[in-house]
Image (cartoon, rainbow, N blue to C red):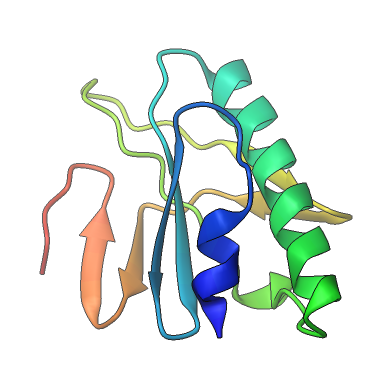
Length: 105
């Protein structure tokens, strides 16, 4: 069902990882403003595609982890439509805990 999502044109350097109905949006950048801009555009296009196939983005389930190489982890806020997503120190994806230091548990 989500195969069509992989054909949606996304901003440069934005990658999707899709498994069943789980979608991970990945963007690598040096500056937070690049990440915010890319995610806003990506989520807008993903939401548009979902509307065309009568699906809805579960914004309340949307999570973000800001993976960083610096010693001090930062918190970022992303805008998904009208919902603001604050990055967390870790998240669970397909049963795997992923944290800001890429320690998989």
